[in-house]
Length: 183
Image (cartoon, rainbow, N blue to C red; front, top):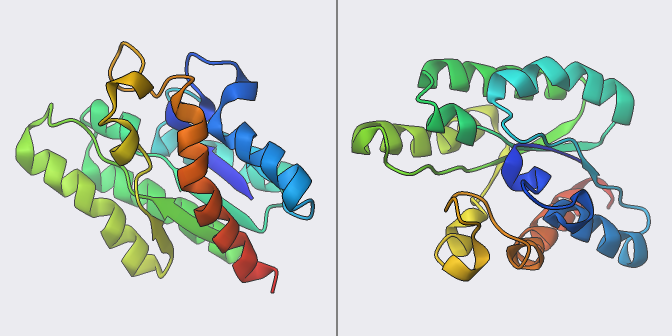
C-alpha cells in the first residue's frame, strides 16, 4: 500500500522515522510481514501535484492499494473545488485502470474561506468516493486537532506525541483495506 498524502502524513516538522506511516510500517513488519506500507507523502502537496507524481509512484512501487490523503493544501489555498474534484477523480481513474484499489481520506479545513466553501470542501470527498465506488476513510485529524497537546504551534500539524495516536487510528483502517485483497 502507498500513502499518497501531504504534510499530515509526511510528518511535517518531524523526523521521517517518527511519522505515523513509519510507525505503522514498523508494526506491520513484525505483525504482518506480508504487508508493505510506503509513504509517498510530501509536505505542501496538492491534488495536482499528487496527480503529476502518481504515474511514477505506480511504476516505482507497483502497489495493490493507494490511500489518498490529499486536498488540505488545495483548501487552505482556496483552490477551485472543481479542479480538486477533477484531480481526485483523475487519480482514482488512473489507479482503477491499472487494477489498483483506492481509498480516499476525508479532509477538513478551518473555515478561513467562509462556511459555504468549507462545507462544500468537506462534502466533496464523500461525493467523489461515492461516485467512484471507493472507500472513504474518516479524517484522522478530527480527534487529534481537539487536543492541543498533540498539535504543533501552527495549530495545523500534529506533533511528535500525536504520531502514535494517529497510528492507532489509522492502522486498523489500513489493515482492513489490505485484508480485502489478501483473503
